Amino acid sequence: MMLQLTPVEVLAVLGGFFALVMVWRASAKATRRASEAARTSVRLMSLTGRVLVTAAAIVGVQWIVIKHPGNEGLLLAVLGVPALFASYTLTRALTVTAVDMPQQKKGRRR
Image 1 (cartoon, one colour):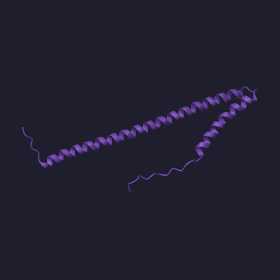
Image 2: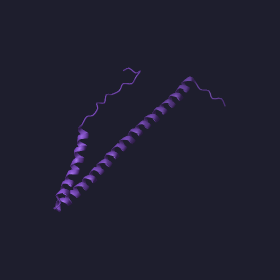
Image 3: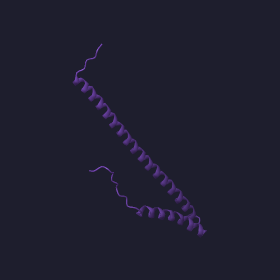
Image 4: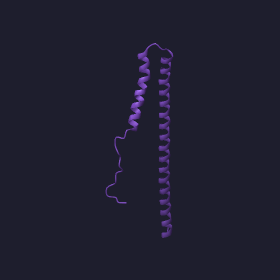
């Protein structure tokens, strides 16, 4: 059996394949973007959880030391060490160490 296709039918088949490939690529990009967004939100929640647990531990230790006075050196250490960590973190976060300039791609003009 010989298959006889007109040029219009061949173009229609090629157009169908092209459309199928374009839809497949678009869905793959959308899936990748959704996956990256989910990972970002999980990272944020993980970071938030670690911050809250660490803060609770620091407050708990400080509360115990303040409620049972008697050792001034321990009180200064318990209050001072977290303050040092916080000041270091804030200083790093608020200090601009470099200005990032967007890099132009060589060979391409806009």
